[in-house]
Image (tube, rainbow, N blue to C red; front, side, top):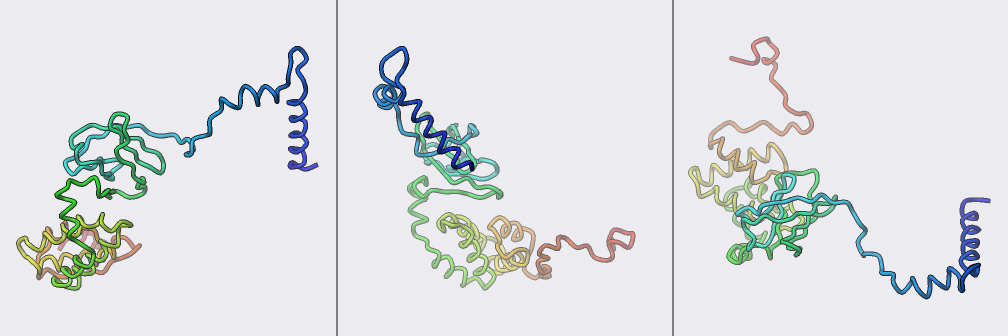
Amino acid sequence: MGLAELNEAIFDLVDEINARPFQKREDSRRIVFERDERPLLHPLPPVRFELADLRKGKVAPNYHLQIDRNFYSVPARLLGQSLDVRVTSAQVEVFDGGERVACHARMVGVRGRYSTVAVHMPEGHRRHLADWTPQRFETWAETIGPNTLAAIGAILASRKIVEQSYRSCLGVMSLAKKPGGIGRLEDACGRALAATPSPSYTLIKKLWSACHPGDPPPPASLGDAGFVRPSSYYSGDGGRP
């Protein structure tokens, strides 16, 4: 007899025992269950129970909470408040007292990323971003140069919800208005693309701060090879001139 047949035999015996009359009282286990116990039962919750990590978080001026080096939005009216946060393997839930005010898919294996819900934005910020589209960002970037266009395209493609990339695109745009202007931004975007095919605004800004037009171009990306030191490094002088 296999396991399936054994289970079927046990089920039959259980049904027989449940239907058997009590010895010292009326009715049977089956009758008591159907009459007295079943009406008191409630359906199981629609979502299976999962262990959660309960935390506290303070809302930053940009209406986001930092959780494990990533950032999750809450309604802007809660700026500066300390809120309860429930973190599971798949979700980040935020509560103001007993009211759930935000729920995000948890970002795992990345850092410095933002999960932003449009309705959480201040009204003025929301209207400002509503004026933009991916095509408008790309049209602007094309006026700067091919490197900036490629960098903006990569930033727009980096988020499943494209609107979440708009703040990074606006950040790149702001660099064109600073000293060095268009040429410096195009140069910084070229350096960022040489380092990675998916540059972030943070990387572009860092390279923009560190380089100026006319500097020698960066080496091509080394991929998985990591950092490679020149042969002079091993000559005994650490590569010093």
